[in-house]
Length: 410
Image: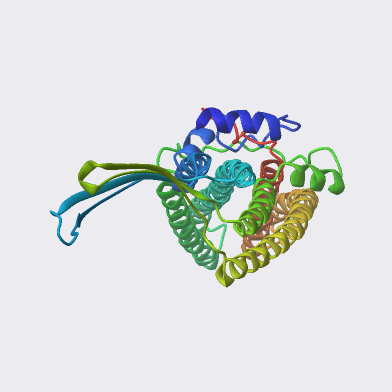
């Protein structure tokens, strides 16, 4: 089964990395391994095995040999009773057109199941990306709030010494203690969110190491929206699976239409009659007479084929919109990160100026704390924007089959 998947992937979905993955993602080798263990992927692989068994069944055909036996007692007036018996072997003969349709249906079902495995792998990879970055975002919040809490601890010690020497008012102690308490509360909440996000990730991917993301600057991959949409649709497993499902429905309709001419049943009969004085060897041929049920079945399957064709069209439209949205999210997130970078740098400079003015007695401690909180908010927004941009880029690359090569089997 794995050989079949690999050959099909190399033929239909060539993997050509075109952009470096964000460095804060797990390694490709690790990602492929944990994705392969996901229940979605295991279930899809089981369905592939079922489709292969179905292909073998269709290739073999629906007919089997049947043995018929019978015994009788002949009573003739004025003559002794005579025992008689007969036996026959029968088998339906599948017409050649039906055999060809069965072979095509089985092959199409396997191709669809292969695409469903690829779709399952991509869905598991999407879950991994979403939950991985949820952990990184929560960890970033906790890290920045820890830095803020540490700075406020230092500020509290400085203010306490200044109050002791008479260089500052006691009101400043209350201000910094209030800010420190608020930072400690925010830190505790951020740490709780980080632990919950990590637990969620571990439940879905038990063997995945904990994130230790690197601070990689988001970089938008080369190409425009149209190119990425085209690349994504050309390699999308869900769309290919929908096409195979529509083709299989059309074949099923043709197969039922072929049943308007039922398969004949051919038999070979041997009988012993008249107490063995007569032996009979003959052939039998039985042909069912088609009725209204067969015509209704054809109409039903034809309607199902039409429905599958419309489903395929709907999937294509939705995936086109999703691919365009992937590009828009990635490009928009990178632009937002760049703008927030300017804001964070400006807020950092404002903190330095405010602190210097406080040391010169030109501003109060409240102004310093307010500027520091604004700078922290700017850094939090910047870090979240960085991770959101990398997550959007990772999703863009994944859907275009340019990340982790999840189609490649270990």
